[in-house]
Image (cartoon, rainbow, N blue to C red; front, top):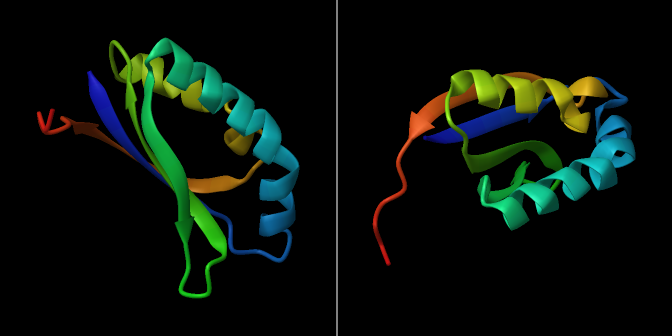
Length: 96
């Protein structure tokens, strides 16, 4: 089952520093997920000035519980980067 994840970073003074500190461990996990097929696409949400302020991705997991387990272990969650997370069931269009 596919899910759309929209995650917003904190807006406090230390938010970008937390993101940058957790970024490489987060990307290591995302690359592993891409390799095993559970990460379809992902990237940063940018503000009008090009600063990273969140993330979005489309992932594939058996169910919502598996998504929640992945999120609970992701460095952007464990290190307090993502402060608000939306999870929506999703279906990619069959574009080829």
